[in-house]
Length: 324
Image (cartoon, rainbow, N blue to C red; front, side, top):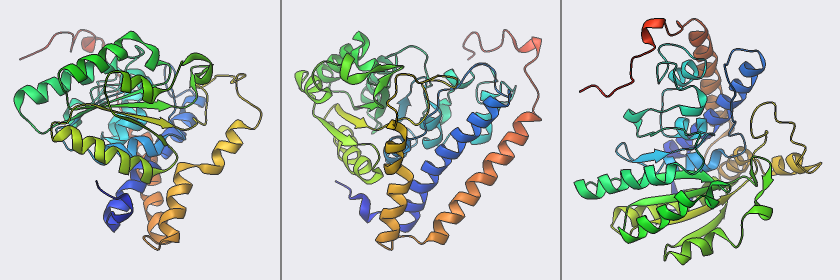
């Protein structure tokens, strides 16, 4: 097992850059949505950054991830081009998916990002398919499926547990439990525990604090290593709080009065900063430099996206069929 606290200086900077890039990306998309620059809506990942960053840091180029409707954070953490993402979300012709997928279906197969998905729980079978491909081809690749507490009740997810265990697939199931399935509290809608559900399929599982990057990294490291070595599937139940609504414009009347204020006291970026500064692993100047770099990147990406061309009528029927 890899101890996250033993990460090198460059690896720690990489971890912080991924988390800060996710936060800055999402705050930027929130601002641009309010300004009317984004068609449709967006589902923001703020407050959940340690999950995507801690797991995707452990993945290799050939590894695959499947995502949810809240897929920006996973895309950034897996290395998708940020300018291409902004263009895609703004519906531009040279976005990652030609401006046709938008926020809800953003994908980049070249980075192993198999796509955000508007169908709740759909990522489970997709990740199992990717894992089966890796197993049949004899590669060392693994697949990771991110999904929420609401999706954990979907039959497709439970069937994926069964299939992954029966075929001993190299897949990691990651429940990103932000407390709500849209507006429905998980304590009201999820019977039993996620760990015991996985154990019923003889799949090892652990519940962890999603505000702590180091806990995410350490736990995921052992599970991913196990999958690469032929040990089969594992499940990671990560708990945290999303800072914004299910979607932009959500009135959030289901929230407690001080719920977000309390959650922000353990912000994953602050937890990381405090840990590395207290241990003298990084200096404030190191973290400030990362923040400046990321902010500049996002500002330039937005400018480029607003100046990029929209899809044309001739683009309407392209990418409908597979071309060989």
